[in-house]
Length: 78
Image 1 (cartoon, rainbow, N blue to C red):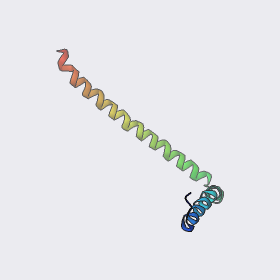
Image 2 (spheres, one colour):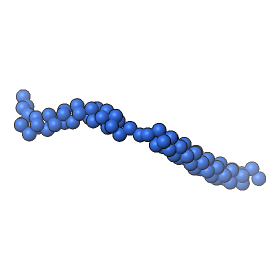
Image 3 (spheres, helix red, strand yellow):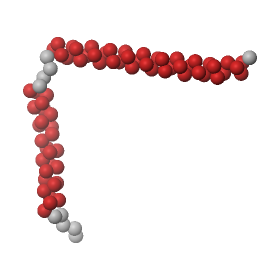
């Protein structure tokens, strides 16, 4: 049977402590560093603008694909 060395058990203890402390840390960070209503609105507006930008880029990519497909098929129709 394989026995863990002292260093390995210490490492596992540290990992277990970190895993146990992570939710507590995230909770306190959320409670202490809350955003103001103005900041939430600004972040919401920024995300909306980024969404519009992504949709615009996807639209241009789709237009390019359709244009390329039409140019590829058009000579066959003549």
